[in-house]
Image (cartoon, rainbow, N blue to C red; front, side):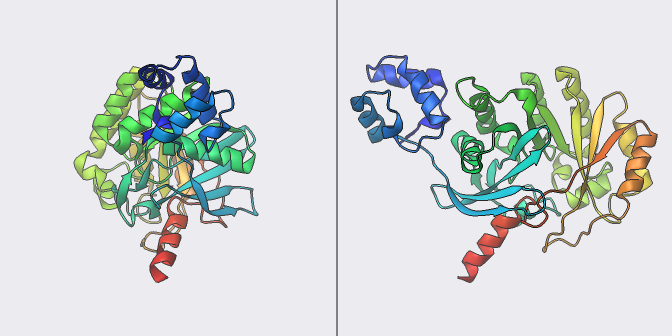
Length: 343
């Protein structure tokens, strides 16, 4: 079956041409798909004969809500979506004064192995399709009634490990006839796959690149992030400098504060040295406790922030959202997987 929601308008048009259907129908079909229809019968401005042909040869992806949790503290909503093959992924809706942000997953599971992250505990199952990524934005908005203004690819999975599908997703959500969310309203997070960072830089997209740094020295980063063995931290920083030179876009460095591991003044000083000559923003993240992890939240967040700022580095502490609803990446999916095993 043809996955229509993964296709651009011109590709739908090529399909219709093969069927001897008028090309203007392609834009109508694209628009219906990105409004959240769940069947071809809902495409009421298409002739019945075309709707029947589409139903016979194409499919529309529609995720089901496996579980939904709403924070009583701040209104954050966490969705566990069940996909067509039974796998589950997480999406989080976060409400800010500047608009509503949806944090989406790019893979079912993750193979990057970061020691403090719940997403990677069970490994990677598969990549998400562009349609499955679009669905997270689309159906989160429809279910919650919230108008989505920003997207962050920071959920389960490594976006640059699913590069081609993520790139197509970006094209789809950017389309004026679709969700029409501009690149400057999209952030993409990576743990540091250097060749893919360079590939992304060559495209000169105006999205925000967020690098999950978590340690500025090779020894510590290897301890908590296996990716650093393949792409050492010095190579990562060099790729970040190349990315800024190519795009002119400031990079955000995500930094989970881990007690006694990555929160020393010397590590703050090293970050400042590595960012010299490149505008960067360091986002300090209070660590969430993960059952399988031996790491604990740092008690030096304020001191670390002050040290960075003393070097002229912009540093903020991420506001913790959804603390009462397993809002951290991978927690809800892991809980449901454990429940399934027990039953």
